[in-house]
Image (cartoon, rainbow, N blue to C red; front, side, top):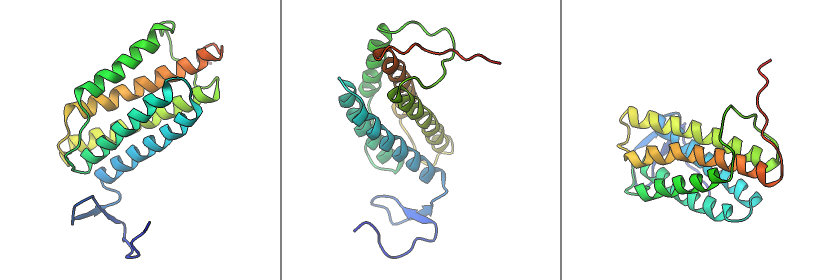
Length: 175
């Protein structure tokens, strides 16, 4: 069943936990942001091609581990998961010109989607860091590193998506 029928009065509970917490708590906010980025990556995955859908599928599964960790479960991303993101970023960067300025989001639809996903990932990282700093949940350093690299990976994918369809990067005009 998709609902309990009990009414929640603004409260929720975590998996395998009898305690309830406010839906506006730091943990609930972080879990919601993790769900949001994971869902948006699902949309990106169906629009992407080549090896990117498989990379995004692995990323989504890793985000489920992060979500479980934030919820208090014994599930984690590993340093190898962080290294994998870094390797993907490195491979993409080899085919792109060096970054010398900020770049205006857009160009192709897929690039704009990856840029939007990057902003969701950055917000998610901030919310998870807030949970960690408030000591609501003890998070592994690999978790924070993974979320930080995720936004870099999505930025690289945005740049790659434009390059693949021949759209040049646009610098801001600062008018």
